[in-house]
Length: 227
Image (cartoon, rainbow, N blue to C red; front, top):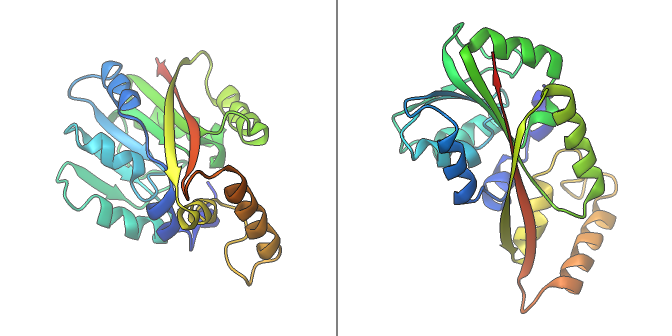
């Protein structure tokens, strides 16, 4: 797991990253035990964890990046059913056979998948379920192909469901949204920042309606029971 990929991006992540639609969350509820114990891997700032916590599940929120974990603590402060864990996907520090469901939201492509699979089998109870979900832009081919590769490597025969997830951006939020992504220029000190910002502004200028840019995402949910 690339621990430093989101260092310095936590605030932008909190303010501008899209969450997940209620329909996707309700679907997840139908495929897990009512009293399930979750390990949410790469919990980040808690975009997914917070939604899951509202259903009352016991959750271990595993996040290795200190910046992200600091925001995670703030996000999850209202909940007493969550334990925040400083660990990686490949070495969660959780006990053996301790969880019913392992979730990975927007992070599977950042993991060492072979090592993560071994860790899942270590911490999962018999017949545990792994759920991976991801927001993607339908016409963004590079992003889709990268995530498909991770899904194809990790899962054998997942059940797949899709849910529309439309989000709306002001110009500032649009720029912050992209600053929250790993591997892209974040400040003026970064090479290519001005060109990247100009490209994003051009997209906003072209596609906004009355200062609001509509972005039609798809939330894809992959699930598989591991025997």
